[in-house]
Length: 338
Ligand SMILES: [Zn+2]
Image (cartoon, rainbow, N blue to C red; front, side):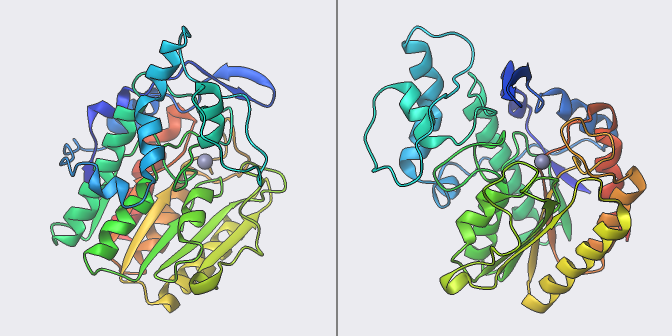
C-alpha cells in the first residue's frame, strides 16, 4: 500500500490532557506513529501542496489562530501547552478577543486538545500526507493509498479544533478530489468516535456522503453530534448517515452496520472513497469500548475492498499503542487484497 507520512508529524507532543475530570498523559502521543511505522513498508514523504488546499476547507482566521496560538500562550508568560478552560455556550454573540484563553475557547470545544509548540507543523504535514495520498490516487499511481496522518482530523470543523484534531485531513482530501472532478465523494468513518467535524463541514453539501459507524454519543464523546436522526440539511439532506452502536459491540453487529454503510455508499454513486480509519474500535483500546479484534480489522478492510472504488484511507484514532501497528496492517491488507 502506497503510504504517505512526514517526520514533521512527530513534532506535536502535548504533555497531558483533561479526561473524565483528571489529568492524564496525552493519549494521542507521537509513539503511535512508531508502532504503525514498524508494521508497514517504508512510507513516502508527502509533497508540499502549500496552504491553499487547507484554506479551501478551514476559515482563514482559524488557521491564523492555530499557527500563532502557542506563541501567544508563551507571550502571556505561560509554559508548556496552550489549553483552554472557558468555552462559549452556543448562541453567544461573536466577539473579537485578544486574550489567548478566550481565543482558545472561541476556536476549541474541549480540554483534551492542547496546542504545543509543534502542533501547527504536525497538523500541516498530516494534511499534506492526505493530499499526497489523494494526489497519487487521482494520478492513477495507485488504486488505494494510505495517509498516515497524525494528528488525526475528523473531530475538527471549518473553524474549530477538538478531540485531538486541528485540521480535517479527510475533508481536505475530499475537497481535492471534488476539485479534480472525481466526485461524488463518500467518506466512511470507522473510528470509534463520531467524526463530528467532517459531518459539520458537509452537512448541507450533497456532493459528499458522510457515513459513520461509532459509539453512541449518548454514552461517548463527542456527545453533541452523531445521533441517528442527524441526516443532513438543505442540499445535503439525506447525505449524512450515522449508525451509533452500543458499548461492547462485537463483529456481528458491527459487520451488519458496515454492510449498510457500504450499500448506502454504492447507492450514492460515489466515484471516490475516503476512509477515516481509527483502530480505537479494538477490544483493549484504553479510551474506547467496542470489542473488535485484529482479524476484524482485516474484515473491515476486505468489506471496503468489495466496493471497488479508488480509496484513500486517512489515519484517525487508535490508542492501544502496542497493538496499533498490527491493527493498521491488518486493515490495510484486507483493503488491498479483499
Ligand atoms: Zn476515536
